Length: 208
Ligand code: ADP
Ligand code: ZN
Image (cartoon, rainbow, N blue to C red; front, side):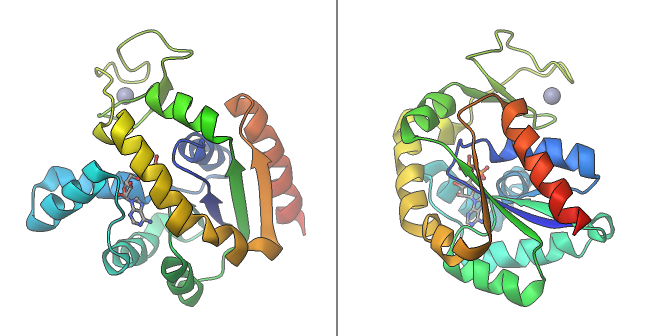
């Protein structure tokens, strides 16, 4: 099963992807996580990617498409995968159509007000990637691995604004691109509520 998760930054794609990944035994491919790993390598590419991410801008399509091609060719992807954060432009979506057939496209829908609240209270574990919210988690350490939680630089207010503008301009047009085959889920409720309706949808499409 191959799945795309569409949605604005902070809409809850990553949290949802992790739940699907656990239940359906397919890997989560987060291009944001792949890029953050490249940044840690401290290569010339890493430095270029870092400066784009820090500003809330997109990494160029050719670079992005290449890393997705490479990642999806790995052994653990043979039964499918969840794309979290890709495609983010029409050109990426067209490249993906050439690469493979996608079974399900899910739009994670959230109001702008809630997005801003959630992004500014988001904390992440730099060691294992777990995502937390100050709205419901008060410890400063990761529950899973004990590492000290951080606020991503691009979750700071001035960059959030820029990421949302980039989303509106480049990524929101994908909603039209996929309009005839989009499953839309609201993420205003709890992560479990959101996941429940997605799970029902995926199970019914799997049975077809
Ligand atoms: P969020 O969805 O919360 O904005 P991500 O972790 O998905 O965060 O992405 C962080 C950054 O990585 C983006 O702002 C962008 O710079 C880069 N990035 C991630 N996915 C893509 C993509 N498909 N195309 C271009 N850049 C990307
Ligand atoms: Zn952790």
